[in-house]
Length: 258
Image 1 (cartoon, rainbow, N blue to C red):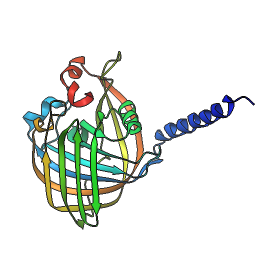
Image 2: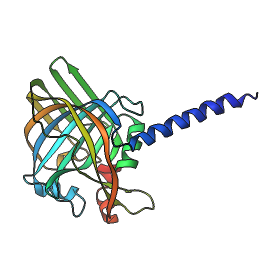
Image 3: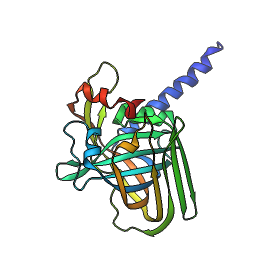
Image 4: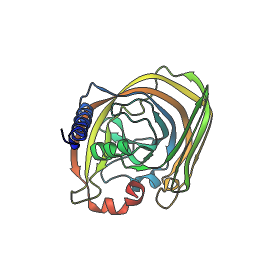
């Protein structure tokens, strides 16, 4: 047996394993994330300042709201353990409240590739601190030397009928780089709550930088802070809805891909 054959077989098994994991992402009933933690603040939004960050045809829900969050994923199908921070803007999808994500960072390259290529989340690499000690929770997000989000508080009462954090109709922008025309995709993840608790004594600070201008998006007072613990399934697969103008890419390149 030649020296390269065992290596080739090992690589082959690894490719098959990766393929199986990717195929599992398309199973709407398969649990992709177990006990995902979303530390989120629902905030008021200035419609005039937020509207330029939305693709053409995407309308803010009324009243204008957004979820600013940090997250911890301890167990997922493709084997990564990682953290994330982002913004979910509440938008109008028919008669329902949906989500558009204009900004997101995380600290795992595999999750970055899958999230951008398959679902259109504008993921970039950054640094996220996450600490849950008893009932005390605090988190922070940084990128390229700039502190973008700091949040903290104390876990309070359980919420029996919480709003969803992720299980809403999504409208994300894909194909922002390369030869393909940018397009809007729609999908709805499956969210299965384990526990949601109110966060009291909550403090939130939002910063910004040239490449991550969160401070320009019109975030206002905090309405409620919560810690969601949920299992997530794929739900309906992403469906292309309509093309986007290349001008959208040019005008919103920094916060999405740089």
